[in-house]
Image 1 (cartoon, rainbow, N blue to C red):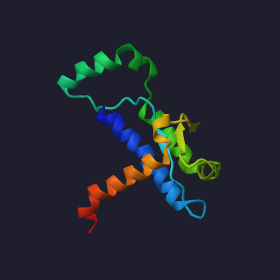
Image 2 (cartoon, rainbow, N blue to C red):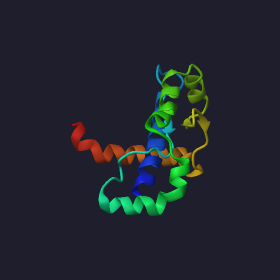
Image 3 (cartoon, helix red, strand yellow):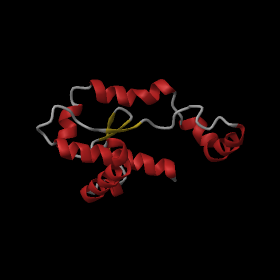
Amino acid sequence: MNYGLTKALNVLTAAELQRRWDEGGNAVAVSVHPGLIVTNLLSSSSAHGIEALFFGPLYQWAHKSVQQGASTTVHCLTSPEVPAEARREVTSYYANNAQATPNSRVLDAGVSAEAWRLSELIVSDWLT
């Protein structure tokens, strides 16, 4: 659950940052879904059983290499159309080297503003 929440927070943070920059900014903020990547994240012996249980055959069929997972990030960094797309769609989200639609719950501007406010509250001691 925490993993999913942090991914949602990534989308919310990028959306709020893009709203704050607006069209006049020199940069854009996008969020990227790399897909299921083969990593050593669950490499401990106790987690290996969990990985097999939850990801088993589906994971083996649907996973990407690290290079394949990085391709959407590289696309966002190098593709000339991404800045215009990001300015047109405040919540600019990419998967598989193309603009995609995130979960509808992260599209609410009020939710992204509140997530930003709470994030500032959490890190405020380190910022002063």
